[in-house]
Structure formats: C-alpha cells, structure tokens
Image (cartoon, rainbow, N blue to C red; front, side, top):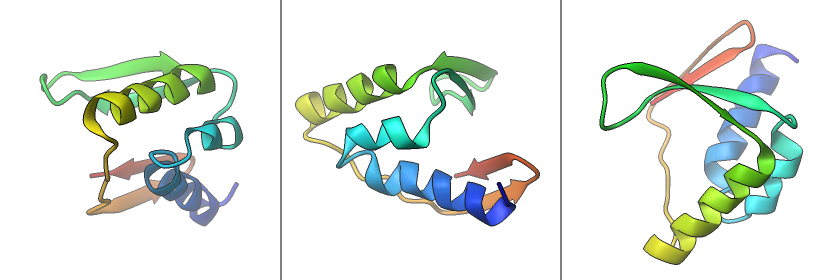
Length: 85
C-alpha cells in the first residue's frame, strides 16, 4: 500500500469505527499490533489485538460512554507506519 493508502486506512479507523464497529473486519488483519503510549503512562507499549477485540472495545465504549468522537490533530506517515495525535 502507498503512504496515502495507509493514511486513508488510519483515518477511516478514527472516523468510521466509533460509529460502525463492524468496519474493523475490513480495516484490520486477523492479528495486529498497536504501538502506543497509553494515557496513564509515558512508556511506549505494544498492544496485540484482533478485529473481534476491537469491535468489542468500541461496543463497550458506546454502552458505557454513549460513544465517542476522535479528532485527528496531526498525521505523519513514513513507509508502512502512520502516527496520529
């Protein structure tokens, strides 16, 4: 995939999945990793997941918090990596 394709895919994750968790089936590989800094920690973490786990997480967020809206402030891509804040 091109850098622009990767950025479109990441944007879709933030814009579509909170309202349509089944989009996880189209976006994610059967097993994947998030490279993230968790909000409660400054230590980078690698989180392994799969589409079903992501769908369940978004459904929990919708049930508990009524859903959410994520805003992409900045997106940087190089090679096959895309970083957002």
